[in-house]
Length: 221
Length: 218
Image (tube, rainbow over all chains, first blue to last red; front, side, top):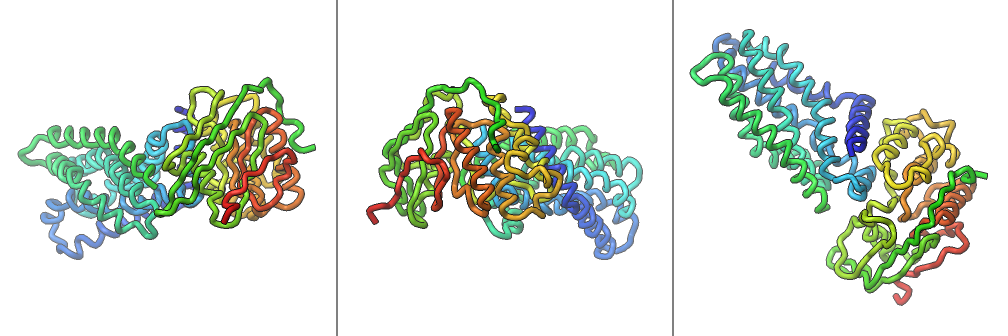
């Protein structure tokens, strides 16, 4: 069973590496969103420093939705999904492996790009560390929650927008505690650990529940 | 003689596939009504009938990919695992990732499907040799021809042993030499006690195969 997980994970990483673009497109979109923010709100350093964590989180959330609609669609089209259904390996494990690979190729690059982009939004040392830490812990939850939407829209042509409409409301708790953890690290009255622990809890709960929800949706095809 | 070097092992468990009173509905229409047949280890069954008569539906139902309205499908003598985990299902889509090479695709399926009887499974390299594709092992599947892709998909059946093969038009896009080669592989599979249910319009190349005509009345 472990070898099945590793097999899917490695295949997804390889496919992403060969095709290219899945991770870098997200980072470029992230960069674009962050870059246009000062044009919209004005170049006031204090204002940018204050809204910076929220803008970084919103941008990362939107960027993480890119490519998520293809998470199961490619497998449905080439017939791999049928094989996952047939196999003695639980479908939940296949979903988990696909989510892990998707986070590695699409979510992790966003986290790694955050320190650089944070500098454009006047984030200093502690604030940067807070945003990076909260995104590192919170972005897996975005992937797992997104997997439910991807599974529910797997047969819908151009289901990307529908998926975003389904997924974005579900990500609100992640956004709330992610931004408040990042803000707390930058200074403020709330201790950093309180929202950060809740964010960790949300990620763990989504890790435990979302593969089952996504697999259930895939079984309804 | 392709397929002759397949490892033989002591595998003659008394397998039985029993299908009784199978009814399947698709889109509000009863596609299959009261289908029943029985297969023993070593048997091959060819499902025939005109387009839309429900050949693919029957195979997908046997594989457990479609729900049945009534009836039973049971595989006896193959251990505790469900029927779907004991079968290979090959349909129009090949289950191959086009950016990966033929070898990488097969290595993936070998390690993902790994189970059952290792003695009856070929290594990815041997399976590729068996379908005559050693020379394109390192080429991305995306640049292979339709027939070559199909042969890579057929090689998947050999890298992990499953007693029951469910084949939907397995000969699509294959040339004469490849057909003969795959017919050999199917005969080997039956000789080792495996079972085959195939939907096809063309001769399967397995002489002793029985026939299940669907929709003969209409």
